[in-house]
Length: 307
Image 1 (cartoon, one colour):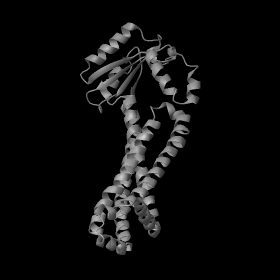
Image 2: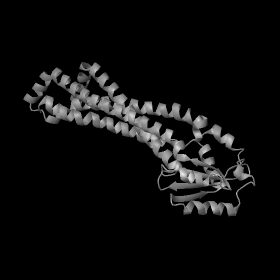
Image 3: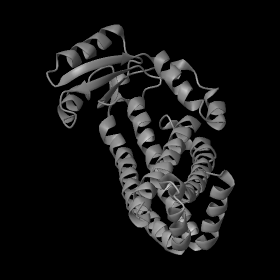
Image 4: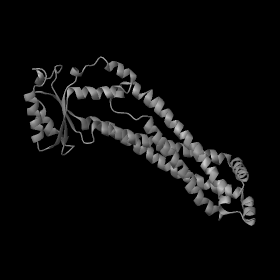
């Protein structure tokens, strides 16, 4: 098998099927971009859940010197009040676990979060640890039943407020889930369309080269020799589509995440995806593109070329 002959047949095939090749590239590009976007959304959801805690339902914020609630008239929570609050939480049958976070720990965690953006990092420089409050983070046996524990803690001396993190984060999780599902459903439909387009492209290419294929059979050309130009055509289209999809994901990360989200006030909401996640999503899309090129092409060439 001569390499020059293979590439000559590849060039001939591409010239004969320019419109079909472009159509295949566009369809595959959109499919892979949506798959990559879905992967990014999945990883963002995971990072958000890890940041807030997978089963974290309530945050019982303790009084600090800057608290203005009626239960904080005496100033910051005193040790005896803190012990009574912790005892009430641990003895509550609806509470599965309690984790204490000091004001210094809250400050350190906020500092790490604000450092994701230069603008928010400059604002955080004037913040002091004593401006933060200590808190108990409560995990419930039933995540959907927060009312009784909230009612028990509300009005307790030393408790500034009780926040239901589950309810606050529900719209964010719902939005991320809808984005992920929508992108993956559309991507699946487009992947099916791409597979059908590969099949149609192979069929048309085989018909256009029927004379050359017949001659190859007569001279005893191997199965792989006949299949290889078709495989290379599909692989080339998939690599071009994959490269465009990676470029689209990189543009999304740069303009939407780094220049958009991380340079705005919502940068401090959660821990955001970065280039590491973008490389994983791009690599997954590229690998899927190669599979979309190779598997259907090998199957369809055996069907339409009868080799």
